[in-house]
Image (tube, rainbow, N blue to C red):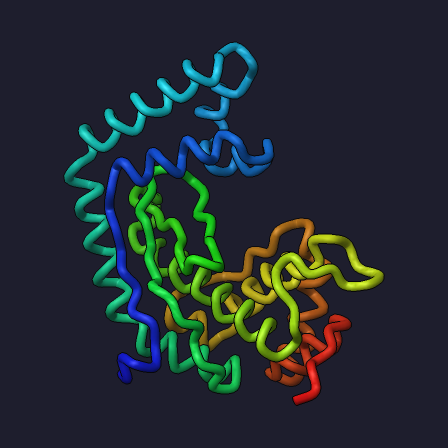
Length: 239
């Protein structure tokens, strides 16, 4: 594989970084907090605790979990590295086909391990979270592939359509581009060539289901990203 063409993903396991993201997530929307912290741990947001008390509970939880589960965390971290190494060549070859050999955006691609239950990505920094405790031992492979697909999609969209994740499309809801990106990811995760690599299934968010169905039908018919985006009302820039 041409190392100058494809990004090299660095995986990081660091309790302090995991805690930092957790504390930062306490300021997120309620639905995001519930996804990140899970139903049981979400109880710390019921209003009975001050921010200081809540942060202390989260800090103690992270410290204790890492201490008691050090062996498991180490194993999952190793699986994340090895799993991606074994699949990245097939993945990048497939994404080349999907995005018509569009070059990968520059940046240091870094995945940070987390013991929580939500794996956000940060497009500008090329950073994302991956699981260290998921019930599926190789789930980090799916997460890594999913987030890198976002990075490629938004770069392709910006370079070819002049749009970003926060762009507003006339006649569409404010988060339309986000919905398109998530729905497209779900369609690709249900695409047979992709499934052969990751044993993935399509799981669209409920709020993206309508866009997902439209993309799925068009993708199965054409397998052309530009035709798909055109069908969604996105206009390609004239070169």
